[in-house]
Image (cartoon, rainbow, N blue to C red; front, side, top):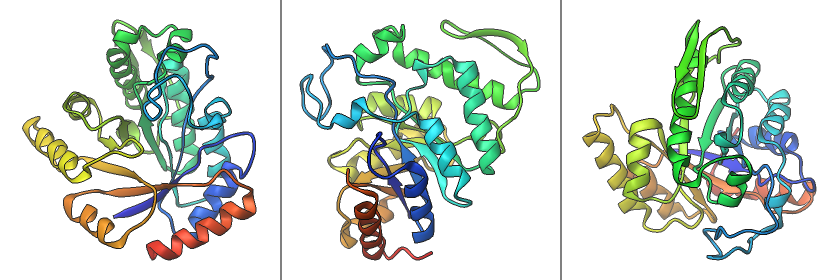
Length: 283
């Protein structure tokens, strides 16, 4: 089982480059950042944790661009995987987004992991012209179109939300169209069915309950859907516990990811040192 880090980026505190560099030095396997293009002041969407329009953290309105953040991290690392937890592809043009992701994968030597979400903040999505009731279909089309751009010499796509004729586009990702793609969402049958059809694995929501049951259900639906192997499962954890981690590894959790405190670089680096020690992570 692998261990990773997620930095809730903002315009204060430790930078993505410094955090990723420290994570790699300490032996962590992956480094993730989130995405919000903006937060409308007036919102009707309820946050999954608060249950209403209030936000649990002001960094939602201060997040850095994920691809710029990961590019700076790529420049100072050589091994650690670079991912999003999670990005919201439907808030972008799919052709230019595919180019950004492919460029990062090319320049980092094939280290990109794409975590995507449907987007809980429908007010944010609306500002980008995303029909709230079609966001799942839109995301599926975006991923399919980007995979075509990543793999085909002359890529083309025709869908409800994405359409372009035969086109040349390089660079191709080092990983080709097989960039690992995980969906960050609640552990429901509806979300698992979407993952089985269109993704490679699941990223849990913060505070997801009954991990063992939900992982078992995803694995069952994976097999019933005719998918080979096992789905990747990335669990967002808060406090490492050896017994819990051992059990998660037994049931098929592939990666456990820990967040960083919203503190100074000095404090965050000290936290990472302690966390690495607790996880028995060694460079």
